[in-house]
Length: 190
Image 1 (tube, one colour):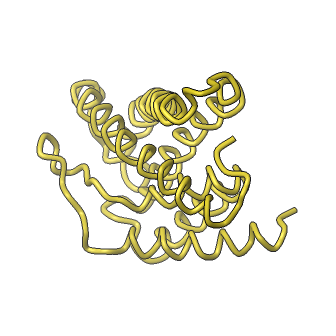
Image 2: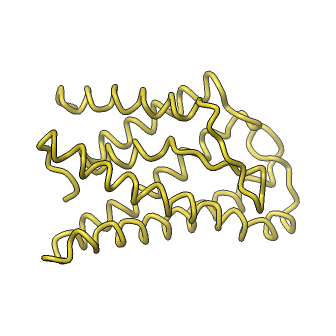
């Protein structure tokens, strides 16, 4: 069950996430213009680090529902691909919290964003490689009906996209959580 602080955090951060997701600020990847860099995942990471997994997952689910209803993109099931990417990235961060966050002592400020980013990238790239390989060959609305040999050729580019997106999202989310957390006095980042 969620407490009132978690519910408030979900409402505020979901509104920010959805507004950033629907904003016109979109940068196509120069190496694969069908992949779009955005900043809407940053508030999800910040909220996840500030308030925990229930809040992070809640915001991600609300964002997915809004996208399904208002702007699914080129593929009606596209928001589920986003959901898988964000949840897998958060799982990597979560593993860093569980297994490594308490082992850095004075190096904590430098080590945590590196560990969270590394694990977030690894889990996102690995999971999304499998998701794309399995689902993109299906015809719409599940996939794009892309032949498997073409998907295999695309996977490195999609992997680079997922890695570079997490490479800026996680550190910016981490440092945003540090700034917000110091003023909110939350149990941030442990």
